[in-house]
Length: 417
Image 1 (spheres, rainbow, N blue to C red):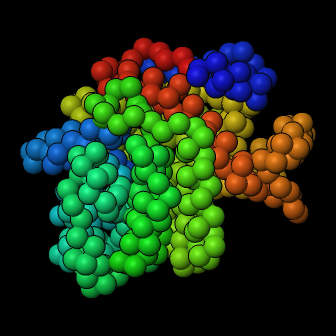
Image 2 (cartoon, rainbow, N blue to C red):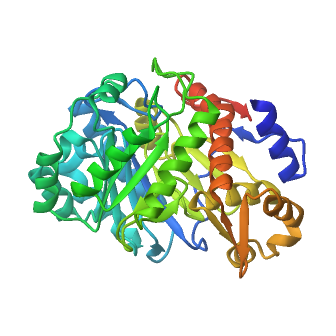
């Protein structure tokens, strides 16, 4: 598995050197001249821990949570005050964990962000189905949230049981969403679960759009080594057939495809914290991507709070990119949207895309992975599946290793991927 990712990385970066993340941090972050900059805030607290979830999370404790939020506000101030003027950013997204657990302080967090950043494309927040109530939704809306993403995973009892989730009442949820409307209501689902069929997924998607969603995300199940999930991953052939079938179903219904596995029923509906050229991350495990570097904060809530109390940024690891490494990061995450525009690439790097990767683009077209029109490369169904397939390799070979180490060590000395 790692051989595939290593060979691809070496070819695209034109180097055998691994991606090396070192225990380094910078007190000043060079984001002032970054365009298309996004913000992300991680809230790691959950009332209960799902065995399939790989993200940084801890069981909710009110006192610890308040201490964490105080530190989070200080981190935002430390970074935001580095810019002389308000920095224009595309968006702000809250992930977790369960961000709704801090609903009472959400307005304080958002207002602190607005002291330093002008948010132009809205504010998104992830929700557990239990939090989709009129009272909670109203608090979120009053705080400034414009987009929500509800982690349904499945409406069906057989998969709720496998994932350790409680049943969801669509009617009750729909009534709450109708009472407190948002610009985007996205619902997340997991595909490639054991014995899952096209009809199973189609039923979930239809249920979502019939009960308040105008956007859906159908993410693949990934078997992280450090989770306690008993779920067995689906075979490649079955997974491709399922992804192709559900993609074609959504397109036939007239839904717009905005990324590898997201679809919307309304033009303005969108939810993605990933497809940004650059972003600043605040909180435990949050990542920061800038023009020449990538940083990841410590996964430890205690060490995060201690680091902030000492007046230092909580960066655990930093990679300082070579130019080719940064291009690979750019192309990988931009391709998540199913298209790459050569004009955007040239604007970002100052060099034509075809000059750097002309052979690879020619080969991708030859293999039927992409089509090209007016300088825009768009993934075919085949290309989208193989992107997903490679992303699965990348996740297990790179992210699984990094997160597995960082869950045990707050500030590891070095990680090579």
